[in-house]
Amino acid sequence: GTPIGQIHLNRSSPRMSHHRNTEIGIDILPAYQGRGYGSEAIRWVLEYAFLRAGLHKVRIRAFGWNEGACRLYRRLGFVEEGRERESLWHEGRWWDGVEFGMVEGEWGVLR
Image 1 (cartoon, helix red, strand yellow):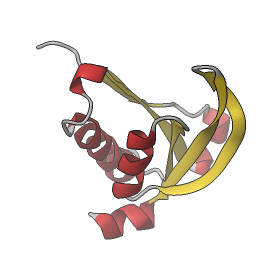
Image 2 (cartoon, rainbow, N blue to C red):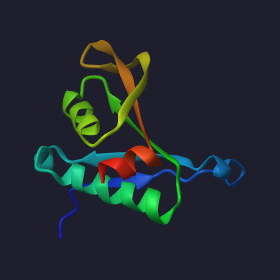
Image 3 (cartoon, helix red, strand yellow):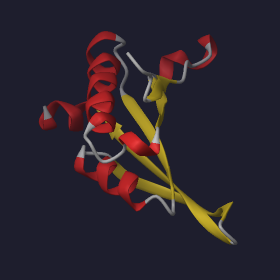
Image 4 (cartoon, rainbow, N blue to C red):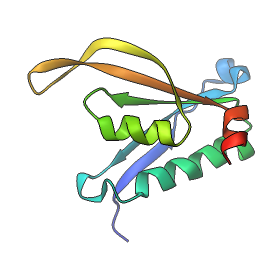
């Protein structure tokens, strides 16, 4: 098959593993966005994170200009937890980084 993007869970350092949280990174090629591949991949990773890896919290970040990603993360059950104001330069202006999170109890209800 042809790769259409990548997704990963960041690994916590052994000293921080007792916090049981991590962050998802995802990038889907533009030609494949809006077809459900991102939501499918994120659901797989959330299932792994909460059921197999025993994590308590998963975070994901969106670029402020990427309204589609923000809508997707909310639809999947992530909660906006904060913004890193004007931290990203894109197309001639400053944008926020938008931080989302989901804890295991929220994921359990959404399943």
